[in-house]
Image (cartoon, rainbow, N blue to C red; front, side, top):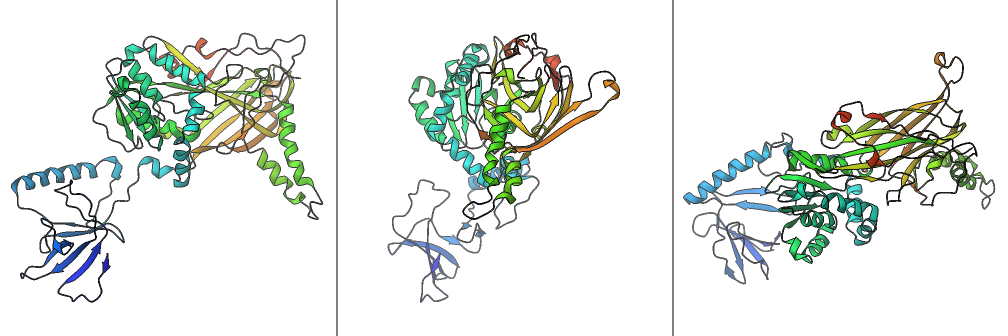
Length: 522
């Protein structure tokens, strides 16, 4: 507000940016400036509002009974009470609702003093860096990126089949689509007979979702798009089933799985269904001389001693470590795997949000061939545990390629193993506020042959990687040959590995036996 020059203390006037009356929400915004005038003409201190030389009816404020709340350096809220009995009843209801809201988890025990603004943040805002969140929602708010996911026919087709083949789970049920994006999964749920679908989307893609859903009126009449984060939105009813595509690279990248679990706790009825319901991270050591040399050769630039008269070699070591701190995202030939894979299971029905802050996976493999191990290869799959049909969505090497591809953590110092030698180690992932993870990997070769049971580690190598900064290689699998007396390693399709409830109560590391454990690249 600006003080108008030349006003006496008795009649102070201020130009307002906006004015509205809470009891009359239909009052249109003023087309000309509104002047707030303090006066005591009638012996009562009043605040009155005038426009075009005339005072606005119904906006008089008795300063003796009013309260002023400072909302910020440029915003204030003036509240004047009423003696109307209905208003008093409404006030009591408001007071009760205010106390209930204040005592909920979202305020984390904070109290809101008179004249102050609550700076309470949601769980998402408390753990995610604002700049990362801004870029994240900007990315998913663009149609070209949604198209990239929609055109991943393995992904989209598997979701469609999982929903339509399990109509019994959706018919007549309330569904919440967590991170709805374009709204495609909401439309699938409506096709399967859902009673109503709430499509929750925090990015600007929510507006596109509304358009797409409106363009399908026979389905759209049962879908409501809600723009907001699942950590914050309030729905008129609980969901019978959650559907979402919360997976990132290595399953957990982007940390949307945490939002999926929060949605389960906030929005899903007890024992409600989740599509998907289980995720698994699969891991196996690999050997790929081509990849290792490719990464190492990138650092040759920093070995120049006369780059326009400048010696760059002082930075070679840092550049070398930098290139090997990037996980490699591409599709690789499964014959590069040195042993059968092992798995880490995350049951979305039971997992806690905090379980995903730090993930520690002990590693143990037996080499199928004598070779040089260059690192750890990882991929994931998820289970749609429908009442009628169980469907798996897999990103395994050798299976049809998805937009997730596979990921490989490459050691800057490879280790050597012989056939039958035990490989141990640890994959330790720590979430950070850029919506990703820091990966710490250690692989070790244990003593082998006679007396191995008394022996320890004979060679070990470690690396630290940032899942947020991968090297998108995106090359197609190289044509690798196998030795004449060896069979290539055959990967089981995920649907061939049933998961039972009892399995999920066991330790999270499950060994997957393979039928033909053959030797690999020499």
